[in-house]
Length: 143
Length: 151
Image (cartoon, rainbow over all chains, first blue to last red; front, side, top):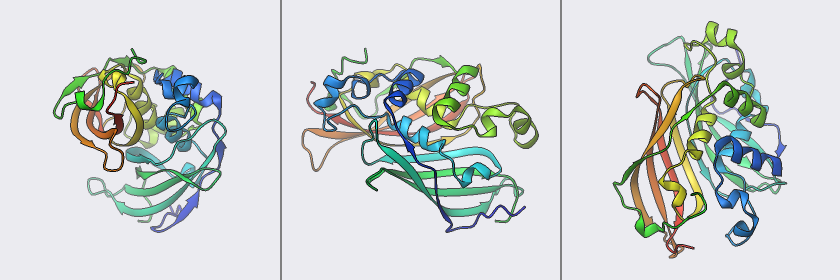
């Protein structure tokens, strides 16, 4: 199977506007009601000046944005890291850019491959709001 | 408890360990998370795909769902005067299935003052998430910026 994966390949995800509904939904899903996400009076006095989305909300929503990754034969999600470099609030529109940093055969199961992705998340001003890495286990194919 | 925020940076000690509350991850959590994020990967939504093409016995929770649920489990962190969430990392060691009950264990790995802003500092935590059998489902770290002055 040739699924087009190769080291150095870059691609972007679809975009999505984060909304007020996303922030409240994530507070409920996670039970994280920290006032910087749900208390306008508190949040206006923070360095952000407004309620901001949970880091996990932004990372999770980005994980669901359409991209080439949707077509990969994923067996498991092995690991992730994120640095939150700028805040995201309701009305901000984000997308991710990915780079395939490495593609190799699994040592424990050579019929499977491990892909490491570098990623950044940008807002509508092209400001980076997040950066990180994802590591995925894939079915067999060229590595 | 979440709105007390009465623990400033200097009250957080390196080496301190603590445990979060528990929570059962349900079928509803997985479906709700797909709906909230748009992550409809077959690992989480297609029972046939999972059984035929992965080592798992059935649909599993999204990695980000585990991270998200962990972040809301009641713990000492809720009282910290957190200014910002700076970063995280996770390695996923075992799947979480609907019906599994998870909790987190934390250890304060590092507390250091900010170089640029003297009113705050950086707290690095190591974390493990365990299931009802004591099996580690993920390990990782969290980095918070915490204020020196309680509000």
